[in-house]
Length: 302
Image (tube, rainbow, N blue to C red; front, side, top):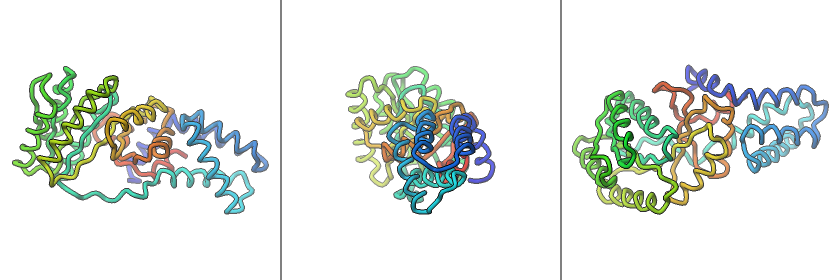
């Protein structure tokens, strides 16, 4: 991952780096000793970089421990320590390499976060890896959603299962499962509606879809991924908490990190929700949505 994508990640995080790292450098260059005032200033920078208050306090607490343990007294040594603390926080200890197929990926998220686009990009990625992919257009309530997914299915060169607008999303998923089994697909992506303002309906709908997957496709590994828009910063964390009330989450897809100074939200999401960030988007093109790598992210951030 440290090839071309690292360069993209680095340029994608430029705005975040301008607010975070430049200010950290400025303070550390002026610092003579490591004291409480210095820690306070660093904490303030983290908070203003949209890392969130609780997460920023936690980072500084861990940083203090590390600096004590390593008996560091030179302010210039703080930055590598800070980078390591963030890397450790972002590394998901539980995440294993996932080679289990077939799998069903249920993609949820409010409208406008880049949900359908993310599905299209991931479908293209898996197709390029030699996997057979099917898309289920189960966001049947938004007029353009089915058409939008169809455009992506054509771009990625994968099959799509769709019904009429306004039809039952669970029925679409049912048909898509039958198609997946018949065509021996490796991955089924289910695009779902994102109407959080009516949680009860969304909960009922997702429960129904989940029941159908469990009943009709027992052999498939099921994952629910939430798509969040990186430009919304701490609001993305709030949104994720609301979705967690509706459905258990296996991972996060964080989009639009290239257009924001709020890239620090990645750290908040991991710490506050304990849900791994699985993919991040740092650009418009198909290959700009990539698997999240904690080490590469921390390197690019600093």
